[in-house]
Length: 556
Image (tube, rainbow, N blue to C red; front, side, top):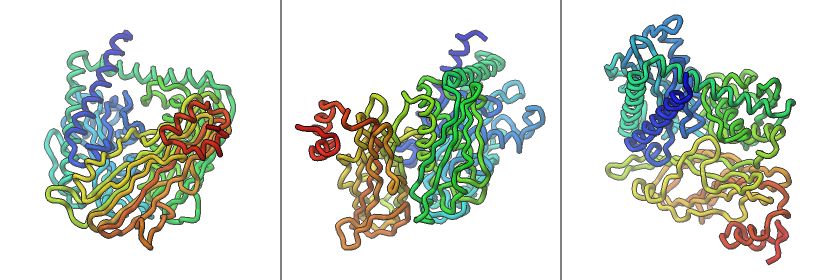
């Protein structure tokens, strides 16, 4: 194919992904969609391989696993459609059968047909306000098996041949505490998935199905070639790294080890996760699709941000897992807290990759985290389920300070504005700030911890999920660690309490809590930080004068 046509179709797909993304967040019912934007929209080839990465990067490797299972269950031999028809829409939220991150995420996939053959798929994946399980909101800090986390849906049809199968929707809505929110988000998600399928069909009609499929194949090959070329420039060798998470949320006195050994050989990067801890009792277990997301993200970050991610990169890496470990859990292990495991795993992988490309080394980041509040009552016309993604901080790197109060690695999620929280839920935000001196000191400083203080205006169940309290983000090349995460409940009372880990807390109206996310680690010797940068930090209240003198040796 000519390069111009390939690039035109790449841009068409990228624009379509943006269009799907825009329509979905504008149509969503829950703040999870409208504000946090905890979802992805994609276009895939006929085998389920991703063509262009969505903003929610860690969803990117999931679709190939899901579509692979759909083709296995419903497809015919030699790529024939089998029981897959035009107008079908498939649904799944199953981490083990569909490769979905956790039960609260629900995916929808639609095939694109031309001349009776499948030429592509479109898909969406989005967090749901509640899908049953032990806790309101479904996500859990201390589940011990996946059945406690909500309704499990293997890949099945929810539309067949263009006709809605209402019994599937009725089953889903019967298993949620938030049927109006979930129904609204599901309908928006299906509509966007079908819109994407219609747009790809239009591309086939304009360019011919063969041209579209050939362009997809060329885009996939191109990404694979780019990655292989980048890997081939690395020195051959082996490097290992490991890191600790605070706990699994159930066995609180036992840290969880994540480990990787990276070997660069013959233009291929080999990642061995076999030395990671056995799968945990609590909900911090990963399926391989999430490990793949961490690997590809870390490779692109280490080798160059201009690399185009898609599933064509898979041929340039090899992954090895041991069975029944944190990075390759088997059912019925709980998985709700997968994201904070992802974020720690990225730290570990980046540390190993820095051995091969020191110029791209970076200190450990904080951990984006989650808060859910199930209110005892709801305001008229509003949901009683509040769900938020909280930002954290990046570590410093070679030539730059770490960013503060932003989603870390992989997700690109948004922090919900105070105005939305206070207008839709019975809470008051008394403080939203950055914590001075919480960024790891270094020649390049780590980003600062984010603080939010909440006052409850009615009784509620509060579920907080976070990491990097016992083991704060570490610095590199002589940089110091960032401040640890913390969660303090019942502020200002005799029962004020710093929780030791993620957990579920029943609280009363009038009580307050303070959440503090971790600060990023520092990069390089603090004594080498430019005096003018320290003065700017003092002026902007990022560090105090006392810390500037004590840590950096700075004299005013």
